[in-house]
Length: 466
Image (cartoon, rainbow, N blue to C red; front, top):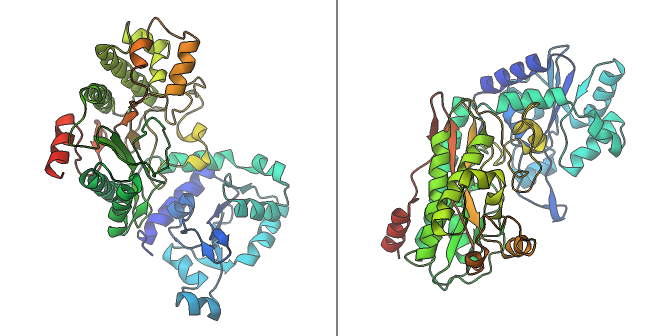
């Protein structure tokens, strides 16, 4: 089990307690989760907020932070002899607690009675929104609350305090994210190196995941590796790769400290793109590079998204897919026919950082509200950037036949869209380019090793490794 120095966690918890001010904070770790019978479990993943404040990557733990009394207690199980036979020697609860600078430890069976006693004494109990069903059941029991009432007990002050703290990355986190993104880069180099026409997508996927495993990492989300890049979250890998196809690979590593990378590259199945693929790839690349040039403290990411969309339509206008003024076209949401998702999201211990706490807190503020219209509602990050934010930038073009058919049937925005040309491209697929960035005091820093990105770089790499 790898952890930062315990003082890192002590300082984090002290800062959280100071920000929340009063009451009792409940931070729940995760349990093992069974796949098809009790003892055959999915790979364990600790809750990210618990990892951030405690650092112990073991199942079955709960932390109570009694701010009013200045006491922290870690609850868990001590290993039985039967446990030790199967797993080897395990640290006791008090030994685990000491690793994180926590001075008190109790058996997990004491959590419910302790919370009931704290409630009866009039102390406020701060909980986070649970996303695991077993934690839902525990909280219902401990708080004596029916399922329908549980969301009403979630503490907004706690959520806001955690988001405020976790969204600005510490130097130790930045170093771990750099490691994770470098491993992610190796995953993409493997895809670009091994892909050949005639292979199945899952054969390439095997090489991608091998690169993560070889670096003592795992994937930070299910890999998207597909010839059908127009399907935004495509996890089917059974297609045969043909010359003339493009491969869209969206893959990231989670390193041993559970920090994430999230990269996307699109490359030809053969040695080179077709002329049509090159034109649209360049439009996406220009949008990507323009968005990156805007990254700095003080700018709203919603504005970066808007300008990336304008730049994208400038490129598509040169190709003849759209007409008119690109600025005006974006005002009418023309870009959403081609670019239906958001430009990026926060990243850290979660590939979509803190998403379990609510996007309205992570990506938005009391004054910067979500636009719920099509093509904007999927923007996970809109608020003003700060030094220390870590985020993705990932523009794309997705030619979705079903969407094009609906818009054409409605004659929607026909003064801007060249439907005749679009209908000749219904089998085009999709292109996305994605890198990860740290917002610095004066601009941004790109994480990870350089990957082939320009058309010449991608084609040269494919040719050299074919």
